[in-house]
Length: 96
Image (cartoon, rainbow, N blue to C red; front, side, top):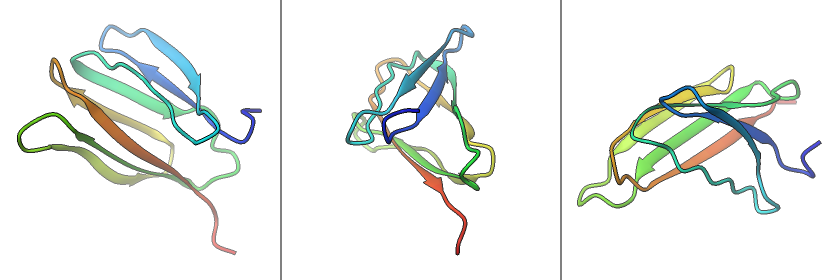
C-alpha cells in the first residue's frame, strides 16, 4: 500500500488533518503548529502497537515531548512556536 512504508495522519491544533506516507528511508516530515498536535498511524492491522519518542532539537536543553509504547498508534505532542521536533516511531510486531 505504501511501497514498504506506512501512512501517518497529522492533525493540527485547528483540526486540519493530512495523511502522509513515509519515504524509502522510513522518514516523514510534518510542520506542526504551536499547540496540541495529534498523530496516528493509518493502518496497524499487521502490528500490535507503536513505540514513539519525540523531542525538541533547537532548545538549549532539548525537551522530551513523548516517550512511550501505545497500542493504537495514536499520540499527541504539545509544541511551542519555533520548535524543531524529531520523532522516532516504531511499528511493533508480534513475537513469534
